Structure formats: C-alpha cells, structure tokens
Amino acid sequence: QSALTQPASVSGSPGQSITISCTGTSSDVGGYNYVSWYQQHPGKAPKLMIYDVSNRPSGVSDRFSGSKSGNTASLTISGLQAEDEADYYCCSYTSSTTWMFGGGTKLTVL
Amino acid sequence: EVQLVETGGGLIQPGGSLRLSCAASGFSVSNNYMNWVRQAPGRGLEWVSVFYSGSSTSYADSVKGRFTISRDNSKNTLYLQMNSLRAEDTAIYYCARGARYGSGEDWFDPWGQGTLVTVSS
Image (cartoon, rainbow over all chains, first blue to last red; front, side, top):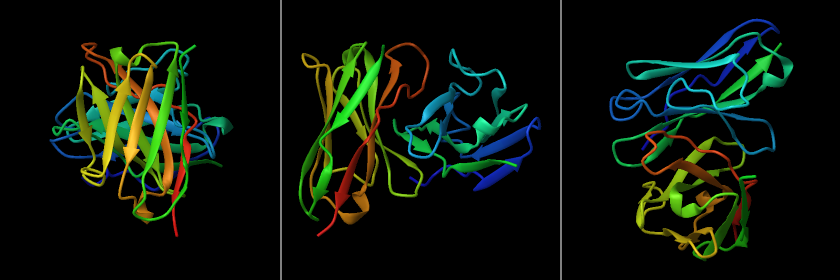
C-alpha cells in the first residue's frame, strides 16, 4: 500500500488557475469513480473539497473542480485567493476495500 | 450539527496499548462508514481503518493484526484499540465520517479535531 503520487508543491499568483495531479493505478484511481480531495490548513483538520471525482459539497466554492482521466485525477483551483494556500490531499477507494491518500501538495499563493 | 470528538491520546511506551474514542453527534454512526485516519508529525495523511455495514472492518497493512476498530451504537461512538505500539505509530489520529451505506458515494466528512498519540520511551 504505497501512497498515490502528487507533486510536492505548486504555486500561483492571485487570480490564476492551478492544477494538482494525483496518479494511481487501475486498482484505485483508475478503477473507481471514488476520488476525493481534502484541504488542510496548518494545525487544522482536513476539509472535504471534492468527492466522487468531480462533485462539490455544499458550501465549497465553485472555483474548485475535479476530473479524472485513466489512472490520474486532478484538482483545479481557479481564481486563486490567498486563503487557498494550504496542503491538498487526494484520496481513492481501492480494490482491497481500503483507502489510499496521496502524499500531499503544498499550494503557495505568491 | 454533525460533529466528531476524539479522545484517548497520550504518551505511551513502545509495546504498550491505548484506546481511542470518537464520540459522534448529529448523526448515527450505525448508518455510515466510520474511519480512522492518522497523520505523523510533518507528514501526510494515512488511512488506518474503517467500520462499516453492520460489523465489517478493514485495516491498512501497517496496522493489521495490532489495531482493532469497533463501534458502540448505544453510545454513538467509534473506537480504535491500538496494541503493540511502535514509534512509527506516533501521529495525530483523526476520526472521519464516511458516506451512508448504499448511497453510492465516497467521502470523508466531517473530520474530528484529532488526538495526538506519541509512542516513546
């Protein structure tokens, strides 16, 4: 059980768009439409941002969107804002009835 | 309001045992997948265990055979019994509600505030 692969860091200026990738295998990301994304600010609990690849919970800004192609899922944040600066984690259900997180991506808003 | 509150963390020697509790309010733990997720200091999230569908359980390989997840519907509480603790089990342990059974959805929401477990001599 190794982690899904995410870039360690991404950055963007206010107003720009960024995309974070999350690569797995056909046994997890590629095999199910059960990819979710979490935002975590320092010292805080994670917060659900996207579920089932592309669904947004109520209360989450529509600047956040998700997609998937093959074994790679992506989180896109448009119109970057200072408060978006945080760590982001992807998560996928797997064929073993377990779940796997990505290693996390630190987003810096320049 | 849906809320999860974890308790039971602390400092424990290697080889020792600890039981974490997660008290839920605003929903019934018997209706949802219920998970434990941990985060070692300065590291990423690691899924640990799930209790679901009556009495089914699943564990990460890293804790299988040492940790046991359980649930008390009358107290609306989830537990994690941790035995044979190792230094690498040091982490903040979060309780996270999963989707309702049969919903066809998959998510962790909300998360509790977490409880810190430190395994050290």
